View 1 (spheres, rainbow, N blue to C red):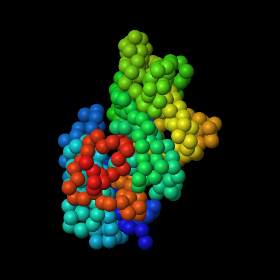
View 2: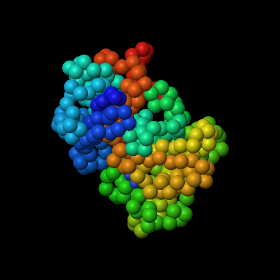
View 3: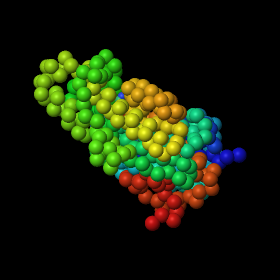
View 4: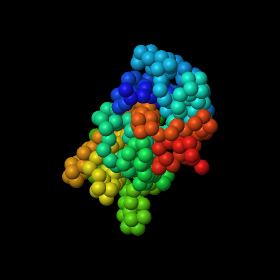
Length: 350
Ligand code: KG4
Ligand code: ZN
């Protein structure tokens, strides 16, 4: 029987605990501190860390009881070691180390971003070599995944804002509640996406060549701010659906074009999308159209597995344990900027 893997995620504002055996998800429990951040208009790291500390044990207990297993049944522990907020990561890593020590079980400190793609194995089955597009409030990256346990490379990432972050900032400009992403999406569907053409970051000339798989959304956000300044608050309110639609079009156009191009250049027929921004309706439409036109199959886990959760971490841990990867050891620390080529903290790390 495959090992039973406990996955722990605390990189941002979600405390996630899950149990996975092989590619089967037994249970997945998430507690979120988002409500505590909403009134500040952004995640407050100190509040998030403290919330993890409070939520961890109850979330773990709930996961064990729902899966009808005990800690003694766990064969290996996987925890997010990075990237993420330093305090939040530290709470999860300390909890995982304590459990690994107490239970005398192997510990894997794994990469959160790769987890966003790995989780699809639990939903749609074994991943073939694929391109992964991870889009959320904190990250926008393209990965090439040849083997989840041993071979992942970063193709590119955003040079500034993440896609969701740009939506949240433009949401603020339009006077929408935080997080603005879903509100802009809804508004955009009632607007004319051809009425205003906003710039497409890193998509033309030398930038397109030099940054083939990178993204940049901060110039776009500035272009929207300038546009609103130019027409004035009142007219901006009248045109807000068109602004939202034109802005969404720019983000979805760039993400979908680069993701499908990556599949072509990397000679891959599968594109996996993860992260909370994958809920964006225009992104889904454009990806579906362009992927079909190029013979690419798109896999997107249900939205609850796209936002941060423990299952994504257990999925990598399970792949590592099945492959017999050497555990990280108990001396790991967090890496807020863990490189995307690093699946986990191997014991021989420098
Ligand atoms: O993955 P996630 O829950 O949080 C992070 O770990 O970052 O993603 C949330 C981000 C937020 O920026 C939110 O505004 C954005 O994704 N988002 C959307 C939509 N749903 C969530 N942005 C645009 N359209 C949506 N439908
Ligand atoms: Zn995430």
